[in-house]
Length: 126
Image 1 (spheres, rainbow, N blue to C red):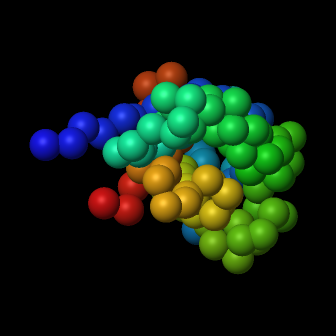
Image 2 (image 1 turned 180 degrees about the vertical axis):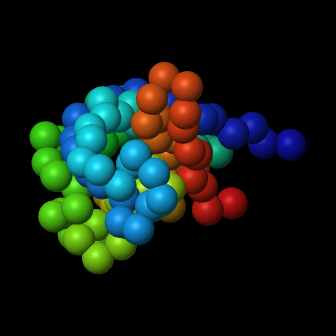
């Protein structure tokens, strides 16, 4: 049975948002220092013995999170149309990272988005 390599990097961004039609405090403008954990997987290694260079994963994550960093999420597409919930953000991050990183050997397995130190959502397409 072949093994699977799973690599993870951690990055983050800061942004503000408000949840439309939410019946509580989060309907008001507030901010978070989000933590983003990106997990990629591969079943084979390249000629160097790597699944993928951690730097490539970090670079892709930074390209994506830079679009959100120090922004009001409710004005950033697609969150100008859909609610900028942690769930929607995690799914969007996953899609953007998959577009950049997925190939015939490597795929984005999951994105975990930490809204606070005690609350997160993990999105995957398993």
